Amino acid sequence: MSDLIGTNRKNALRNGRKILVVANKGIFTESVINHCVQLAGRLGYELAALSVDAQCEGRAFENRSAESAKKLCESAVRNGLHCSAMIRSGDIESAVEDAIHEIKRVEIVVMDSETNSESIRNISVPVVSVLSAFNDKGGNAMPAKSESSKAKAIGKTVGYGAASAACYAAVFTNADTVTQICSRGGWYAAIPIAAVLAISFVHGTFAHHLWSLLGIEALKRDQIRKTEYKVIEKRKQQRKRPRAYAYVNPFHRIDL
Amino acid sequence: MHDIGNEAVKFIDLNLIYVVFLFLVGFIGGLVSGFIGSGGAFVLTPGMMSLGVPGTVAVASNMCHKFPKALVGAYKRFKYGQVDLKLGLVLAASAGVGVQLGIRIQRLILERWGPAGSDLYVSISFVVVLLVVGAYVFRDAMKISKSGVGERVALLARKLQSINLWPMITFKTANVRISLWFTLPVGFATGMLAATIAVGGFIGVPGMIYMLGVSGLVASASELVIAFVMGMGGSINWAMHGMVDIRLVLIILAGSLLGVQLGAIGTTYVKEYMIKIVMATIMLIVAVSRALAIPNYLNQLGVISIGQGTITVLGTISFVSMCLAMLVGAIIILASMWRARRSAYIPEALAEAR
Image (cartoon, rainbow over all chains, first blue to last red):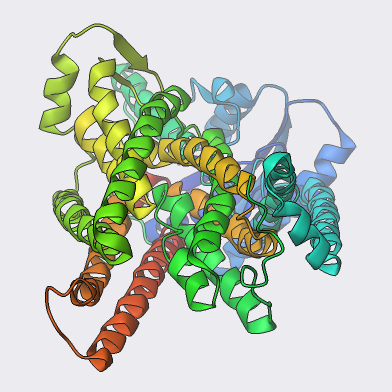
């Protein structure tokens, strides 16, 4: 990683316009990587990757961010773009501001929508927030965490699937008896009602985990709106500033 | 309580084809219900009857699978912040009264004109309600789709909301404040239609949208609450008469619980007017399907005279077009989900700029 940072330091001092890509907890998600690489390719900008160790995790953070930054740089290189990477520690906002001043000509900051909005409130360059993942766990964002949560998800799906299959097997191996009892009427009506409610819980939970495992999860509209509001708020704040800056409309046409 | 559980005629023998058929219809029905709030189950009753299940058992089993499905769908959409529980419960209460009246009217017609008269009444109700409401919803959805602006509160709803008639109720999630008196006809009509054609949502959801001023998303989600309450009441009633075939219910549930969750997830991907488009499309195709069944009932009543061959052909086309309605609905949902998913990680404003 130190080699990577070392070689990329030279790139950082290049004079081209840059997009500063800020990692969320040391990780650049697939969405962020795709977005900034495509954006930089179209605008003819270079990329500068920044990981901020806000929690002072030290070595673990460095390793994690190095691996993720490598992915970003590789992706950039594949697309014929220059990419530099750096690691800072401390407050995200000041780290980003320092990086902007150090590497010069940063036109846009691309961030993960999962990054705490409070920590990027006063950045002097337009910030584009990219929706990182559909799931609560950060999707591809954290490979280590994602793997464990995926294992958990598989476990739950298999568990509830087995429970659901057991319920169905129990009913259908004794289909005649169960059907007769359920159709006796009167107070026996409680049995089919309770059975369907139990199945709706077990099989319903299985279905929920199955769709999650297949990557089909609800899209967080609120998260998108939050991102839009954040961008709009940022634009309003920046209009009041006396200094000149390059205005980039984050809503402009982008084909990915 | 009449014990008819052991009657040989009642329960069919299941084979693999029947199981697969019921599972698939359950899945597609669940998908549609999860998306538009209801309307996914109407194929099941004729579908089960075509397998040889007696009419009452088909109706009872269909209803018994509907309420847990609605429960799961409502819970899922509640988590997405789309369900107005208060609105659902208020409407469900008045829908209960509507159901009772609907059943009484059905009984009166049955006594007076027999089963053919009753079927004719059901079919005419289907055609009239679905054509009128479906065409209106379709026109509105197309207007929104073309103009590109979001859903607007209907003029009637705005006027009704401005009338300050005690008791006023505030529905927070729906973001509506309206007099209780205006919610009653919507719930009542939902119950009436549920008792007549078994899908109250075809009037409940448009009623909530155009009379109360609720958005399509919240209306379709809250309809699931109404479907749960009414379905649970109806299921207990049918189960007490021993009419529920638990095997059929469980097979359909296996598919529909998967479908209803997918449909509910789908609502978070698509633009709100898609709910109206899917609902209107299904309503209009079903209206045509039921219109094709009318000549048979008129023939049975002696009003017109047509050959048995024609009746069979019309009956087949009617059933196929009903299945087609569900399939078209499911395809629209899945296609729009697929399209939305492809551009989903781009913030909406960027996606719209394309």
